[in-house]
Length: 298
Ligand code: BG6
Image 1: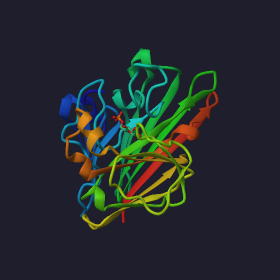
Image 2 (image 1 turned 90 degrees about the vertical axis):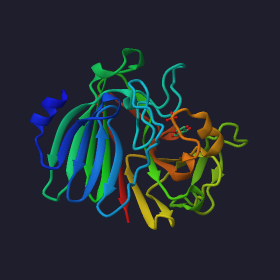
Image 3 (image 1 turned 120 degrees about the vertical axis):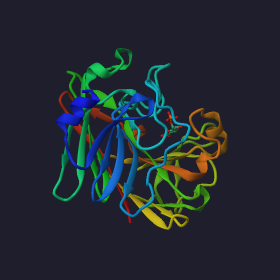
């Protein structure tokens, strides 16, 4: 749907459709509870600000806004694979975040929340990356919390294994000062390249960030980011996920990324609701799986 059709079809007080960075179509939500900006390219929430708060999501000022490249920051949708592609040469974190999604529906609730539903048509996916027939939908609820629910259906006639993540980037005052709570005594895999030990770690106490951190925690629930600099706690709840990824690229890795400013590692941390590693899901023909995340400033 082009911009004009969207404007006519979803003529709502709290929603505006605009052409933004990279010529992508954005959905700007401004309701009594919060503001949010959503790119239809990638079904990507690039900003979320509850009333009276500072922005919750981090965006890189170096991000690409280019077809075929992911947006750096906000909430990338990693699907149908998490991390490196199973086939060499294919993009990291799947095709969902580098595909053009369609607006399925936009509605306002009596509660003041706005619900945006985006769908990824199979025809919009680069055929070279398509492994099986699927249906994929992202529901975004903008209110006092930001809720995302990714619904995936295996529309093929054989079992399919999928991994993925709601790869949220959070804006923080200073990486060294925050504490990530909720993962003490939980086992994790260390994904830092060259880590001497990958498996068998147990998190002792809360997590501080003072080096490159790239971990998949297993058997996880809600996590909180305690940020004394911004004087707030961000709570990240989730559903349909037993794995949580915690990521900060720190100095060496961020300097190596062209779409990430050299000092920006200092003001972000990723907490991702994931189906990754041993939490890969095998979907039978017709089976539905929902991966959800709810972000709230306490
Ligand atoms: C994280 C991974 O989820 O995403 C990291 O655990 C990876 O290993 C990071 O570096 C960013 O990935 P990308 O493809 O967006 O650069």
